[in-house]
Length: 188
Image (cartoon, rainbow, N blue to C red; front, side, top):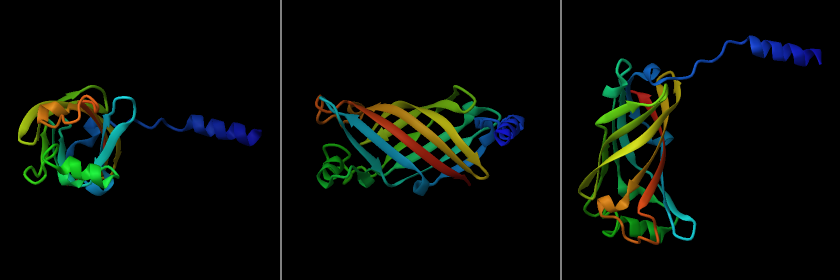
């Protein structure tokens, strides 16, 4: 009982750990595909979803500590790396009905706006180009960790498939694609 009381007293005496803020992460970072995940999910009528990931992508993140609004994000996804766990579904997604990977090699996002929403959160907006079509998209970003030269972000957002000519299968499959990404990056 005494040991427990001493342990609680020591815990209470420790200084509070400061939360990581976007300003603390100022610098240029290169996304590490090996430590990152770009996952997507398309809800299906009646329940369930078509879910998958992209295995190949690259990008960089530039965070301005003085003015977060001038920060930039630049990501390129290679749609031929899509994986759902079903080879037939993967082949269909790579076909001209969806990604058209024979003719369209990249999906690109370039931020034009970064709006801070909290100490460690922001909304990043800009043009997304897929299948030769460009639309403005917004993603919610949260700085999850900062350790030495490494950062990790959680990025979520929703994109309309129809905007990019990929609405095959609607209304059985939703027009909305939900993205859930973890982007690990190293100072570069």
